[in-house]
Amino acid sequence: MSKGLKNLSSKEYPGRVIIIGQDNSGENTVVIYVITGRSPSSQARKLDYDRNTIWVKPTDEEILKKGNIDLLIYPAIFILSQGIAVSNGKQTKDIKTYLEQSQNTAEILALALQKWSFEPDAPTYTPRISGCVLSQKRAAFSLIKRTSDSSSEKTIFEFSLKAGQGKMIATYTGENKDPLPSFFGEPVSVEIEKKTAADMAEEVYKALKPVKKEKDFRVGVACVFFKNLESGQYNVSIINRYERGKD
Image 1 (spheres, rainbow, N blue to C red):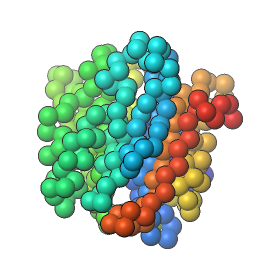
Image 2: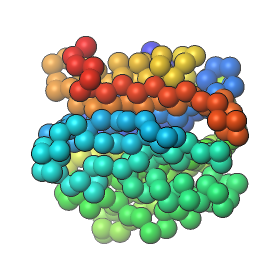
Image 3: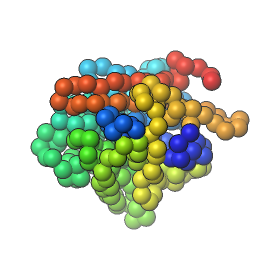
């Protein structure tokens, strides 16, 4: 398992996770989105691919209604000719819009997320994590989290894509306690060693498996390998726990 994914496996509850990087060949840009959930409403979800979009959808409508549906159901990844937009909420739609208006990934996130704050899910106040990539050269993350005075702290991390390497950001530090501590610091470096979307999704899914007898918080993993944005050459692999069962 790669260095960064060992870091992921040490986290009992990372929340939502985004990884952006390149495969070893440097030919494929890699975007990965991960969902873990503690509550029944968070667990009652799946990742679903439809028409260039990866959606977070319900597996059980009745259980889902016990949570905040506005925060639980959303488009997680848009795959466009201009680039890729990814986030842990409905802000993905705004990132998609601004992908058409700039060639600078940091600027795209700054403009698209102007009106957004952390999630209104007291007492956790889950951070909004977002990312975008325009080509096989540049990408960026955004982290919006609550400060001690209840205002929003917005941080953007822009980085170059390099073969076999990636960056990872999460909503939480990984400690399973209340309230959940928000992610802080720089994005974590990840080695991307697998050659296909299916193999990479599998590696990330296994990295999230509980070490001992802790509760399995995994919900789903989606991985996109795209070789050429303009021609639409890409592959998607999704693993949903409700379909996969115990392993």
